[in-house]
Length: 132
Image 1 (cartoon, rainbow, N blue to C red):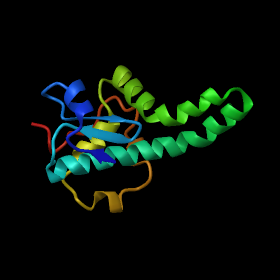
Image 2: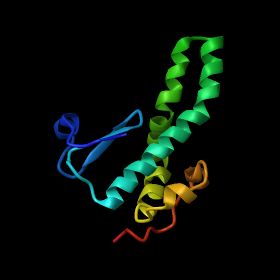
Image 3: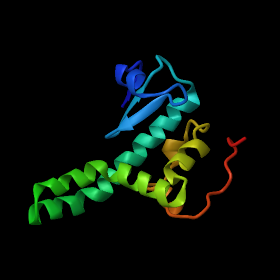
């Protein structure tokens, strides 16, 4: 879900960033987005859903076995993977995939499940056509 013209986005973001994502919801400061920006956010939403689904079963088992607090792992799995990769690798395969394919309006139809996993943890990512 993309929430346009969000008060939260206007309050928390500086002028360089135009959106932030929290638990799969994208908050943007603008009323309208360009087609490529909208596609970039939709790719990030799909990545969040995939990370959530991958962590759901282990989190459920841990929550039944140890504590219900482990269910929170499913909800923060995307953010954990994102920041761990940014911290160790100084780049993100999530961002790279979204930027690389944001110009293709049919990408979400032909995209395979967990396409970001192919590049996760690599030391370098291939150059993007969008990089200057």
